[in-house]
Image 1 (cartoon, one colour):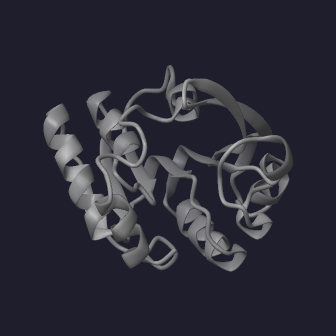
Image 2 (cartoon, rainbow, N blue to C red):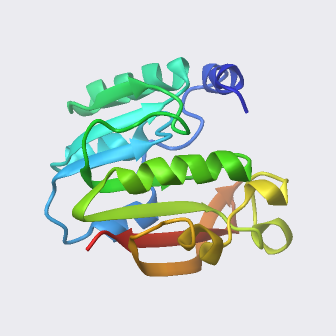
Image 3 (spheres, helix red, strand yellow):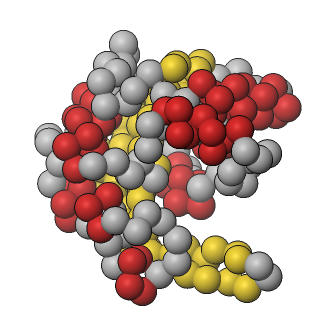
Length: 197
């Protein structure tokens, strides 16, 4: 989707997703000392805001002006400061390295994902971590939600293979409950957690 299409989607309703942080992010940072964090393709900002509320110095980057406007509002409501950058994460170069870089549910064509991941890897500081989560290919047949195009979905090993000199700590499929009209469905995601040693 283009930035304009995302603008239209974000404009159409309150929050497209919940204001709650991604559960895999919460698990990944448990026990970490807060430092600097970079949320690439931050959308409406829920994960960046949660990180800021938990002591992280956060930069959120997205190419949707409407998404970032909603992120600013969410941050203001939470009483936290986040640096917001309007940019295309496939081309934006982080001016500094970060202790935590997250790329959550960025579903683009494979060359664009590879470009974004190269930039994410470059933004990880020594000792820092990179968390990548997205809908898994298997979600098409066995799970709920996500893009219907398998080319836009993730295989954990494929994502891990794009992370250059980072040391991969986890690369696996994970299950995520999704409430739909009072029922609970299961989404299958790919999760990759890596660290720069």
